[in-house]
Image 1 (tube, rainbow, N blue to C red):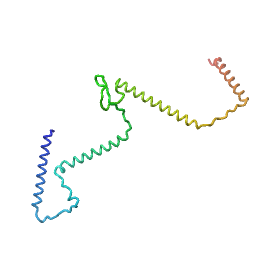
Image 2: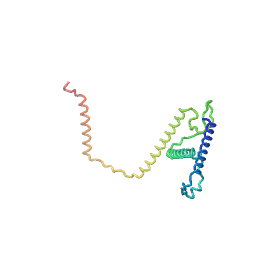
Image 3: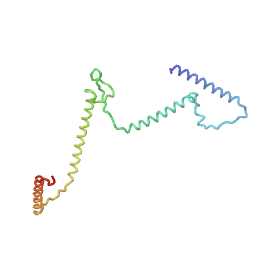
Length: 187
């Protein structure tokens, strides 16, 4: 719909509304004198400007739509506040001719080498971040271990226990050697 058509329709609407308002006024003047009811209006209400035909026909709907849009934008704004992702943005980018140019909103690291280089840069940054975290963990672990001062006292076991252990190991080796050389009788 063109603007001239829209203007023409609005003009016709205003003419129709003006005619309807004029008809209401004429009807009000033609009313018999026996209808004398006068509504009680607050002083504040009587000071308010009367609503135009445009407000009655279109303005309220537009105002309602604007209120809905404002509420939607407020909700989206609140949701966006909870997001913590902030991309690294650069003002340089590689143009179609291969030359670096200035611009807005280009993610940094996506300059030379295209997408593959950008992904490698991201992976490299992630590895560096992980290495820093590992270093911090080791430092904090070393700090915690400084507080640990317990060292158990070692005692030598009795001689007879050592003899038992030695004889058991010799017996075990002897069994393993004999078990390999014996052929099962059931074959």
